[in-house]
Image (cartoon, rainbow, N blue to C red):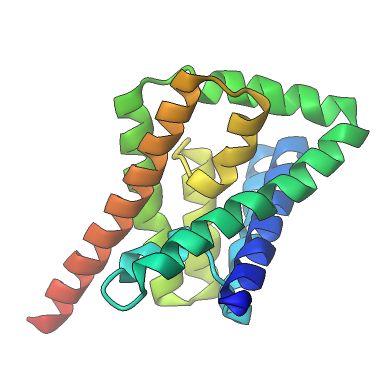
Length: 190
């Protein structure tokens, strides 16, 4: 369990670094591409990321998935809030993005979460650098929602409504990933 906690927190920290670079990047395409360093490192090092594991729910204990999610959420806050506390322009951008992100409705957040879940499962399942980079870029550039990457936006702009929308993202990421795994397995068995 100690290993899962450590690897989950580290995965969250890596995603947080991705959130920061994507937030401060002047070019949205470059920011989206650089964000992929987080998932590439997580896959390469075999770390624990909830959105990379939830699709494998039949082989990963639910307790471990819960631990991963909590560890990821704790870890993602560390770099984002540390940098934002030292650079007011980063905090301003985070607040602007948060306002925009949480202006979407509950159903939108769920749907955007589902499609992000599809992409995260494909990126982890394929374990191919090019596919991983493109999956991350597509998720970011299309405005899909990722529960770990979204958590700092909730933390700095907390409300009951935003928390409800965040839960919709977790559900969407989970369902999108699980369904994609099912469809891929069904395809392979034919």
